[in-house]
Length: 194
Image 1 (spheres, rainbow, N blue to C red):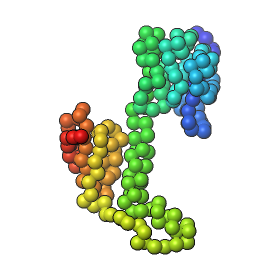
Image 2: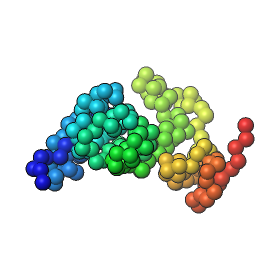
Image 3: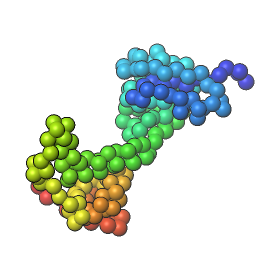
Image 4: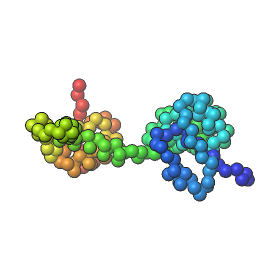
């Protein structure tokens, strides 16, 4: 058995620090390389001797996978794996992992904040206050959320989380999703017509 430390390559990420990742892997004490890969060739160069890869956007193509000498796992920051050649990885015995609930709460909360900002004219009024002017008559239309209808096109994890948040503000929730037949309480499935 080799005493060589495992190598983990983070091909790319859009957050400034990888301290959380290092803490999670601290028990096995791997060598960490944070590369800032954009192209296939950059990934090949950075990850050729990686035991594991953590990836966000950089392409993990068949060519990349064929160049990996010892890689056992590729984990993706995010839900989708469309930038990874799953078929090639499977052929080479490389496990692919993702984060199925990545940013569900963050995106649904941000969406709810934007809905509330629109409903209450926050951006417009904030701009007027910054100009040292207060005239609430400019903020029209303002509306109460209670009893208003929020329509969702698609009912995946983010939309369901948003529906739960919006119902707390009194919204009636309707949704269209041709792939969903059962919905959570408080959501009404509707048909979509052009």
